[in-house]
Image (cartoon, rainbow, N blue to C red):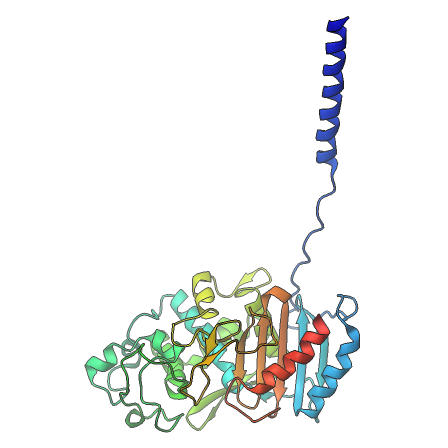
Length: 362
């Protein structure tokens, strides 16, 4: 009798554990993560969604649009997971309007620097004189030899910024600090980066840009010389396409535009200790301190307090804005005239705009 009782208990235990195992096997799998959407290359088709569909506070959309209109905005787009949530045009602009990126276009040059390195044409740790030739500045040969390509794309060349901000003539490019010792937003060394790429590939920068980036992701637009500068002009959707590419780490759908993930990560993260909020020509939020164009002060706190910490951005004069926020699956584009005081890159307008955007997405 005792043996039968023991066998019966064993039988119950077997049934219990069998049921438990069975329950684990047939448990429903988690829902798959929604795939990032990419619009077709040669088409104006672009899928959309709505604020209410994705759980945003749709009541805050109109206040955002009202703010944009009265603050001299021409074009505004929000992408969520690649799809258009809102696309609006104001102040006589429309979807075909081309606007200058100004310094937001520095991000395009940073991306192309990575492409050129990936293809073996240059090394960002090498001297820029390797690609520019000697006497591109008023420095000695020895001084030129210790300025790297990396210094150009991190604003740490050490060239004297107490001159014409944009002048790329050799007599404007004089010694002030050792490279890497000081951070200052100096436009001329950035502009020369496109010449570095041209020298490295032995061809013109714009053709290389068009074939390796613009045409591959369906952008339109062109580079326009303006004094010493070279500004990119395009419609808002083209800027949104580039933002979407960067949201996905340099990959467009199943097409790899930039395969060097190490460069991409370095480009969109702190590139030096002097200004934590600066990568390779990209601005970064969520850091402990930041420096601003035309100033030598170090400011404590985040660059854009109202924005997500992982935001990285291309920021241009007169409040041209290209925001990428991986944690929120967001790309946000704002083009137009100055919404505030017309600063060269970051401005108070960033925080005002993100107060409105945050009310919508939260």
